[in-house]
Length: 279
Image (cartoon, rainbow, N blue to C red; front, side):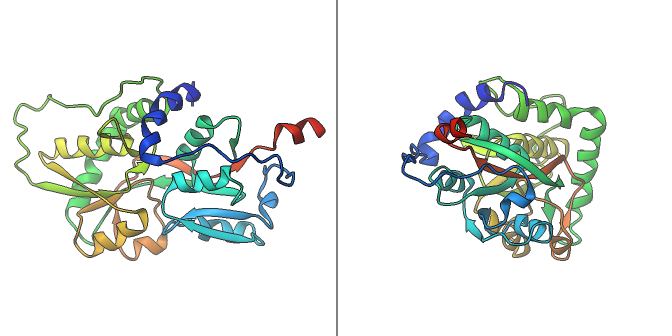
């Protein structure tokens, strides 16, 4: 991602009050540690994962011997725990990990990615809405709009980004119904709140889909772990937010055509400057 430091310097400062991030504790009295750069380096380490995610199930067969998988509700809390040395690594989606590393370049870095991943939105089983949404996503993929959305939200240095208000359909009135979309609004750059707005690539894509289908969107906020149960219980029509397609999830819900190709990454803590000089 180009000029990513500039993105985060402006973007996440607006989230400071929301996220409750605090300065990291002085670690000069902590034991020195080696940086993480490979799967083998994770052996004996404490890793953080989002509750309800599948990072642990993918990583376990690749690297046995990880000391602990500690579940958290929010990425920002995992990042702060990493900075405070309560854990040794964070397992996250690659675009999210890259942005947090850019926000704290002196402390954090993306060590590596360990699995490719496709992000999608989920519907209830046999819901006709699935095919209609998939058709729009494929249309946006072929036209190049999905790539434009990726550049806008994941790579742009524009500090005044907003969700587009489309006007090219003369007969749009939202009369075809409402999509109840549930997401966790703490996943920069996909879905997040800043400056009293709901922003991110996922939100741009969902709004674009609704516009093409002549529908409106009702946003429902909840923790990531609550998304699939809420969908199955009929509390939402569509859920997402860096949500990976997995066989276990496909047994419970249907996924639409993927809208983003990403990966699973390890966010790690840099060695202290004192240690780096010693090495």
